[in-house]
Length: 140
Image (cartoon, rainbow, N blue to C red; front, side, top):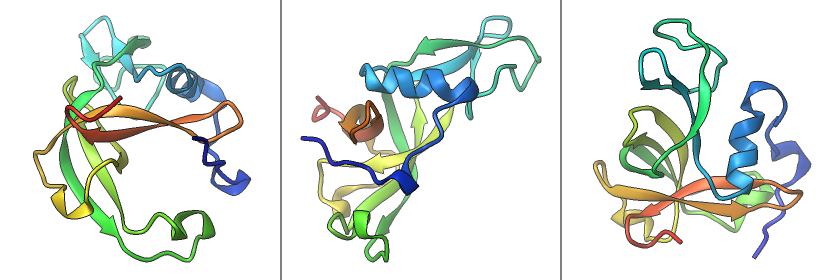
């Protein structure tokens, strides 16, 4: 089911980060990877933050753990009003980088630091999908 994301909430999918959004639309979690020092990084950038070599996009495992999180219980934004409460979390990916996303498909009170999660994708219309995370074993 598609939940159309309003224009004012849609991300800028131009520039170097375009591959991230394209990957998500095709059900793949991509990360910038430096072949010179074998490090994945975040946020997306064309050069490695450690050695300045050119990065390339590689598919990540899509697995990680909740590093930290907060439960959003109220909002003035109409798009999110019907979704409260919801969890916004920093996910520490198995590859190392931490990315911000939401934890879905579980009770907000069940989310905890160290919780194993796996990526899932939400179609938000207009050829855009968002990478979200669900408790490991429930992502599909």
